[in-house]
Image (cartoon, rainbow, N blue to C red):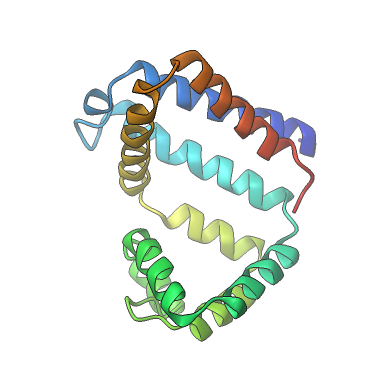
Length: 174
């Protein structure tokens, strides 16, 4: 599939997920861990993430993120890593040990791990994230967005989100 078709398919997928999420209350979708919609959200996001990895310039992304980490203070790194660790800690044991993931990871360790990544390893990490964790994070995101939507015009909010997704996915490879 061409890059343009992949981006278009990904943007359509995002739009469908967003519309489903807006039309159905989060409590209904995520009430059971084994709900049909909840089980489909994880694989859908994984497919979108792997589509991004497939068309991205991974070496450039690594350089950009390593530069950000180099310039980041230790305090800021600890704050941002603590937020990311909420999800990272659910990776399978073999990945946590491979990348020596812990709640006390240092900036140097993160840089080392980023340097070791390639497209295959990134897809392995993406595939290893439990679908229930993706569904939970998506639910939390939706709840926050619903609060924002209640304050504004829902049609404008849907258009804004869809246009942002299309713009991000249609931009040239990073």
